[in-house]
Length: 119
Image 1 (cartoon, helix red, strand yellow):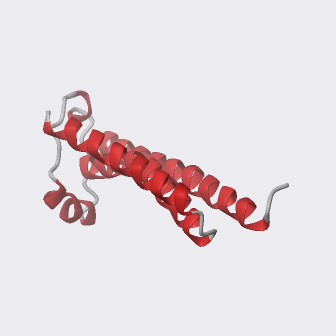
Image 2 (cartoon, rainbow, N blue to C red; image 1 turned 180 degrees about the horizontal axis):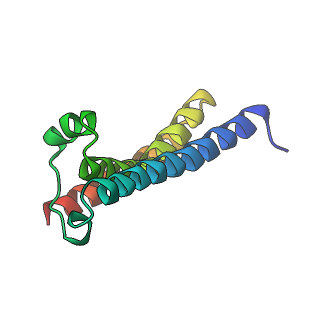
Image 3 (cartoon, rainbow, N blue to C red; image 1 turned 90 degrees about the vertical axis):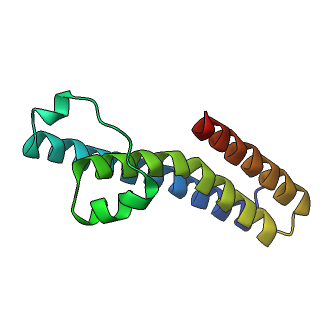
């Protein structure tokens, strides 16, 4: 039998995944639409990556490439937020075993991302 906290935890995780993917998709779509409207010839060429230091200033000016990069970044961060929400719900339930397991999963995911960025 499910407890009330398990049900709330599952709803919170579902919301993170649902809205994380929805918001990131909308931001990427906005970036694509702005790219097509502002510079149609540029839309067919390849772009270089934007550094994290340049991302926020370029987002303020609604740079299409920065919007697309931001959407991709949010999409990649969605599973990390899901792990953090699960870990917080385990902590509220005082289930220390699963808090440590969640922390281990988070460490593996972050290490994998750092190795992927480094290569």
